[in-house]
Image 1 (cartoon, rainbow, N blue to C red):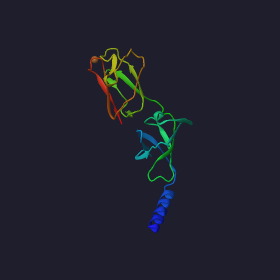
Image 2: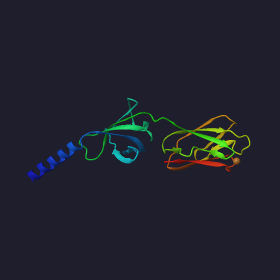
Image 3: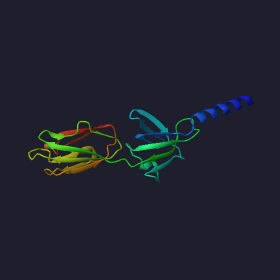
Image 4: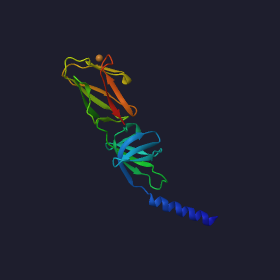
Length: 184
Ligand SMILES: [Cu+2]
């Protein structure tokens, strides 16, 4: 019995040593109270657990998990000796707000073909109507309770935060001319 205890202690300390500390760099993909999902090297997804001792630093100042947003670049210092990945310190910078140019032309709402929004990250659409004869003299985002007039040739900023992956749809006031953006 004694021998077994010693053996398992030894195994445990070897394990802890092999996995001691270290850090991870990535982009926040998902946030919950108990864990973060990071995208590392633009492809791998890693889950890091949070516990009551996990500390946060935003632009070098103490912060809480609430200040963290999807899309933020983070450096996570891992707790040494933990069996799985547990964050000791999460350092991050405020994610730059995403801006997407949208135009209203004779084609309707035109969005950049590669534009992708991120769930949980605020975005500002900069909408410019460049045609006089169009039905789309307003932009309506029904899901976000937003209606804004689009004066001719004047960029209008529409800011919101997509909450889930899928599509964000917007349309004219009569819901005839519409466009959408992909959300990941
Ligand atoms: Cu219309």
